[in-house]
Length: 181
Image 1 (cartoon, rainbow, N blue to C red):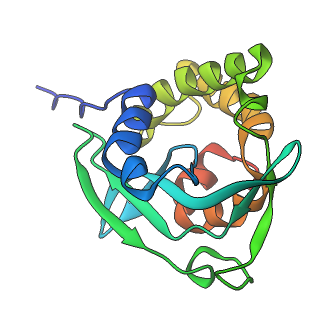
Image 2: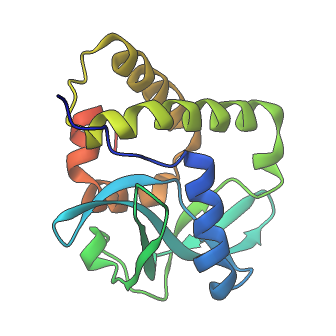
C-alpha cells in the first residue's frame, strides 16, 4: 500500500491567501513576488517576498529590498510565519532604504500577453510543486513538460531585481527546476 500524495493548494489559492493575510497588512505600496518553494525551519513552504514598491518614473515600478517573506503551508495555505528579512540575508548588496531596480507597473501587468504567461506559470506551478514536494523525478514526462513551461514563462514574469532573493530563498527548488536566477 502506498502513502497518499501530500495535498497541495493551487498557485492561485496561495497568491490569494498571501494577499489576504499579509499583503493587505503591509499596505498599498507593497509588491508581492511570485510564489516559490522555500525551506523554512526544516520543512517546505510556499514563500512570497514583500517589498516596498512605488511608481517613481513613468512606465516603471521601482522596487526596494524585500522586508518580509511570508511562508505558507503547502497543504492548506495556512500562514506559518511572516519573517522579517534583511537585504544581506536575501543575497542583495544594498542598503534597506535604497531602490533595487524597476519592474512592470500594475497597468503593464494587465496586458493579455503578461496575464496569459502568468496563468501558464500558475498552471505549471500546480504540477511542478506537488512533484517537487513528493520528490518525484524532474524527468517524468508531465513534470518535465510543466518545468519547461515554468522556464518559458519565468523570464517574462520574474522581477529582475529580486532574482538574487529568489536564488537565496528557494535555492533547492530553483536548482531542481533549473530556473534562471
